[in-house]
Amino acid sequence: MSLKRAGKIAKKITWKPGNMLAPVPVVLVSCGGSRGWKPNLITIAWIGSVCSDPPMLAISVKPERYSHGIIKSTGEFVVNVPSADQTKATDWCGVVSGRDLDKFSAASLTPGPALKVGCPIVVECPINIECRIRTSLPLGSHTLFLADVAAVQVSADLVDASGRLAIEKAGLIAFAHGHYFSLGRHLGHFGFSVRKRKKRKRARSD
Ligand SMILES: Cc1cc2nc3c(=O)[nH]c(=O)nc-3n(C[C@H](O)[C@H](O)[C@H](O)COP(=O)(O)O)c2cc1C
Image (tube, rainbow, N blue to C red):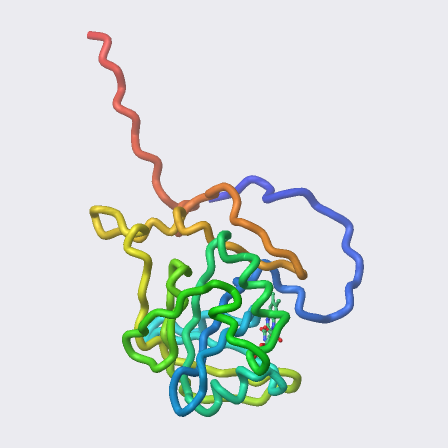
């Protein structure tokens, strides 16, 4: 099988090595709520899924963040995936520190009960992923926290009658080189490039 040329051929220039990967998710990580820590929120863009079975993800946090000490001490956190409605709150939680204030209340975000961990979820966020840390790895500027997904909650209004998660209704956002974007047009689904076209029924003339 041959595919048509996928885009234009552009001249390349050398760029400084750095974190060029884009877009990436941007999330509100909640932490605290146990072991004497008050609940806190930190905005994280250095995050990724790293294993399907068992489900695992990793976040990278700078040691100087107030949340770093909380996450290290409690061994758990919740990844709250924001929708476009929470873009401003997501940015704000990434520029102020929980050392000085209660970010939940100041950002008008609602803490809700998690199923398996001690930290609260952010109720407004459509997806909440509860994580327990398996190991941490100091990398340099950031500590990588590698975690198992212990539980997931999704907003009920995103699940249709057949039980499908209508993720296209979640209003998810992406982060690229310092800018927040909403997701654009739907381009295809997993494996669409090899899906066989359904044969059209021929109209019978006889
Ligand atoms: C869009 C965005 C992405 C960020 N990503 C990260 C990240 O991946 N890791 C990190 O340590 N800090 C990141 N930050 C910075 C922290 O969110 C920020 O320093 C925050 O105020 C720390 O809060 P805390 O002191 O309450 O822990 C990001 C900030 C923004 C706005």
